Image: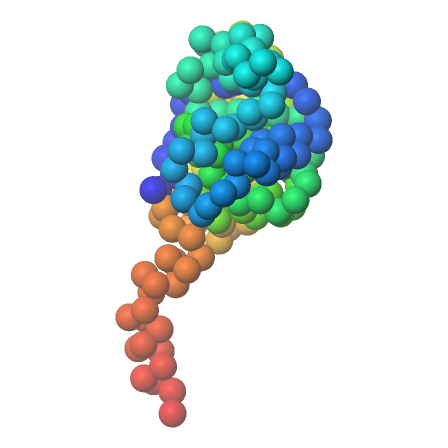
Length: 192
């Protein structure tokens, strides 16, 4: 699905070093179907030891419903290489994660699956976090490469141009290549 400009309330997960096992525990990795994984997102954090939802956890609060942007701490997605973590976030409805930094493998998996990881400098991240805590909507404009907040100058974020193009077109690397088969065939015909 092509990435559009996202305007949404945010939900804050105030923790650094959130690993992929916290995002989706290993016991829920029983297949390769992406659908339905959202119900296991942050399972151990969202639930009390008796299995009931923890009403104080950020994603369980009523104002988190429908939020498409997650604001997280440093080194989000560290731990094992687990594409299921990205799939669980997407299945929950999250399309953007804003953090000061991401684990490299998580960021790569996110981009390949249509989840936008936005790494912001600390001051810019704090501005987004403050907006999120006060339920102000946040706009993420991928085409322009900026996050927009009410009353702030645009907050720029860096991103690989090819990854940006794939997200905007709604394809992964393989889909991008398949869309250009005609051009590839024409190129090959012109070579001995």
